Image (cartoon, rainbow, N blue to C red; front, side, top):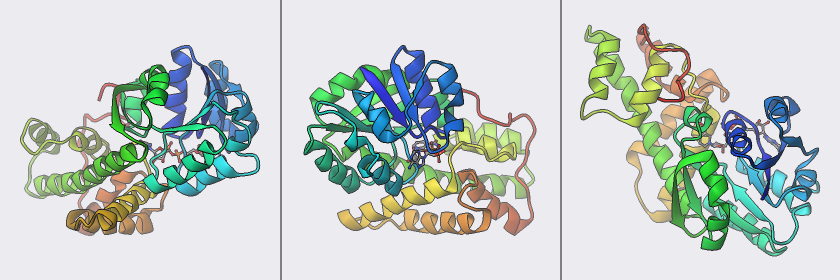
Length: 305
Ligand code: NAD
């Protein structure tokens, strides 16, 4: 299966690298060719446009920062659907709105192209080691045909059901992660202002009933002062917007998520959309004039965290 990969950012570059490492033939494309340098050196081919890439591929993966970018890449005059042959597949790995994926999938189906969604969760350090969790929505035949590629990029793979179902669970798990991040920041601040050693507090929380995946990973990049989790405030605000939409659509009050969405909106206004998402906790540090720093936490998470 010849794979095309569009969107070689903080996440996509690792997913594409995993495909190459596992022996897939991969053509890559990004708005910025510099993002493809390492992949081209590792054996990938370059596609000059989404269309050119699609002509050279059986399946095309997108891993893009917004629904607008996905629409442009899929339906533009030089887009994927202008190049992918009937019988091909589009695999959407961006975190996207379920209805938007279904709309684009209908356009794809009209020309004989199947669609799978396969958003991922676990962070870029897990993508780098090929251990990121993959959530899949779509028909069984397309799922089975792409399982080797999905397993090459990820660790656990969950087939959630029909197209749209993976987007819903992906938004749900990110909503939880953002709530946990704000909660972890408040917890660390209480420890600091209470005069506790922050490294020891981190370890105690990790071994306690208050632990979370976010504490284990993102608290480390807060304590080391880099805030670098490879995921931006722009993306966090996008995903909290999707959660907000799900709450409205399904009639579920999201009181915590609503508050957390506003906290992230304020962080984005303060630090910029390109800032890393754990900077949401810096608001509390700035407001209190108290830094959450501790020695012994490396600047970037290791692939094993
Ligand atoms: P990113 O902003 O780092 O990378 C996006 C890439 O897409 C960039 O290299 C950009 O140049 C490229 N791009 C943008 N518009 C394009 C276009 N029209 N044509 C071609 N290339 C274009 O984003 P990311 O962190 O890699 O995330 C990508 C997607 O994956 C997002 O939907 C995000 O929500 C999701 N995601 C990210 C993470 C993470 O930890 N970073 C984890 C899970 C899911």
